Image (cartoon, rainbow, N blue to C red):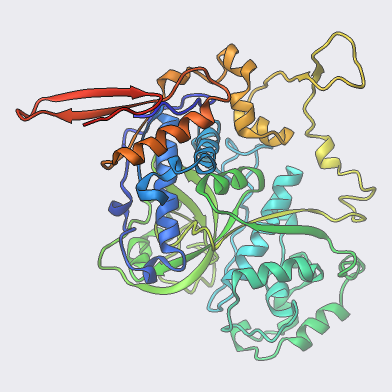
Length: 495
């Protein structure tokens, strides 16, 4: 067992205990999990291990990883990455839902109305435009309803065009269009689909360029003012490589775009009875060994529950009681559903993206390049010294209700590891006692592997702690009696 590091605060441990990856369907074919299946499995196991460290006082377990299952102990860089994940998990809410005003900054439901792609393959555009809407709402701490973005304008009109109802769109290509052609990221009021189609069904339209032109020609002054040079919103995106980063972005911007595989049992688990029930009240989707992949899909992760290892996802299939709802099953009353972490490719590192948006300069919400939303959320700092000097670089911040270690670190742009390992925080007891944290590998390691792990832990923790890491091994004699051998510093022969 290795003494690792410190965490910001303790949170209650889940009574459900650890769920092994193989028990959640991760030991299945790449086809079922989609691209990056092994990466998803690895990331989930690493997340589980970091979460276990964060929630049980530091007792973790080994999992998949490089260098013969050394995982985070392979080298100082991987160890530092594991520490950062552990700190963020421990310093963040263990349950978060962007639709729950009790969880969100601003006390609002940032999910709002649910999109419905009906019979068209527009799920990527539906997910991205909804992510834009939620990011703007979260940035401005305002109701998401007034920032609804038209998925049809984005999908059918953004260059290079030529897409039809059944064409579909890849997530990276669509995200690139979001940043390069922001003139088509427009409010739903600027692209009245029902009026533009004149009674024609969206699925029956074979050519959209004339409809896009008609929308531009009939635009109101406010809509006509949205151009490539003067968009309404400025958006960016980045790929997310770890589960804790997904959770971090959800708290800051409301949602994360993810690829997922819809298996042929999805509509069985969410059958017709689900249409009248909230997705948050239903059991989460769980893998069925007989299930087979039906199709690839895009959705939004809008929440998480680390106590029960579940994601909350927002679909683009409307609500169960919507007038004209075409689906007999697979739909809930609020468009949300929960899924066990690690399944269906949700959160796959190479297919999960953060979308961040803010009002563009020169627009009514950002008229003078001053970012008024940022001013309203500034947190007061007090100079540490009695004299206010220009050279003073040390300030004091008083924690207020709702603050977490993660929210403070993110707000001030701090380095999480440096914050937790700061000697002032260590002396004040802010982050706990280093000697109480252990890490249990789940498999037998050879002596050379133990040397690497111990050396890695020592190199990293010696910067902020005088406590030396040690390894404790369990040995059994010929009679079956168990004994423990403890070694610190340079390993001696453990035979």
